[in-house]
Image (tube, rainbow, N blue to C red):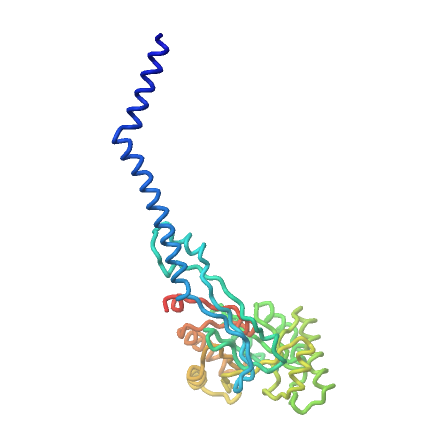
Amino acid sequence: MRKFVLISVLLIAAWITVNNPFSHTYVSGLKTGALEVAGNKNSLMSEIESKAKEYEVEPSDARKDPVWKVVPGYNGLKVDIKKSFAKMEKEGEFDPEKLVFKQVRPQVHLNDLPPTAIYKGHPEKPMVSFIINVAWGNEYLTGMLATLKKHNVTASFFLEGRWVKNNPGIAKMIADAGHEIGNHSFTHPNMKQLSAAKINEEIRRTNEVIEAVTGVKSKWFAPPSGYYKDEVVEIAAAHNLRTVMWSVDTIDWQKPSPDKLINRVMGKVHNGAMILMHPTESTAASLDQLITQIKAKDLQIGTVSSLLSENRIVTTKKMKE
């Protein structure tokens, strides 16, 4: 009997609890809160998806150019919806500063095009490269290397094969400092006037001595004094070298004053610029200020490989635009 009474009391208590208006309010509140959170999440996700296109950039294919011969490709940007949502979820509001991007490669790459001399990088890439051709000027190289190290800048040194053979210690020092090593022929001839056999010999011998001394396999060829013909570019390509020229010349061999050299470069520098220089007194004296002023224009300084790669440089300024 007592057991029956206890069960009855428990059932009545349960009925009162379930049908209590305060309980209904509490449960309803929980449901409403859950629905609001889910709704906010769905709303934020939808907002990111709808606004993503405003911030995305189409990739740019490598292409032939009537003036610059060829222009390398450049990656586009696509919003990573899930990662962007994860960064904004806590605040629950759309914030363009928290968008996460992934790079999208173009369909046509530099290697898809016939071998052609390359004069500059992509015009939208905020980077420049120092092309330092070395066949003499040992007395200025140590100072230039120290300046590059001070500013944490890597450059592309194009070494003459004969010079490497005679100066293996300096050549290795350049490579060990993290700079890119390119081929600048063996005896610094006018490549335009050479036979195919001689062109091949100049490039092959230089590749061999650079690799023997530094352990580096060169990727780029810079013809001495900028003299070349189509055959030179094609033979270089057969040695797995792309031919590079320049779009800004320091004309440092004319021994300009540091101010004149800096003003000349800064008046011509642009996105994707390849800046030609040599180990001269003028360049050594100008290099510190030149780097400072280039960086002040929001331009990065990197190797030829970095400049001509499709990798997009994403800056805060670009994101806000």
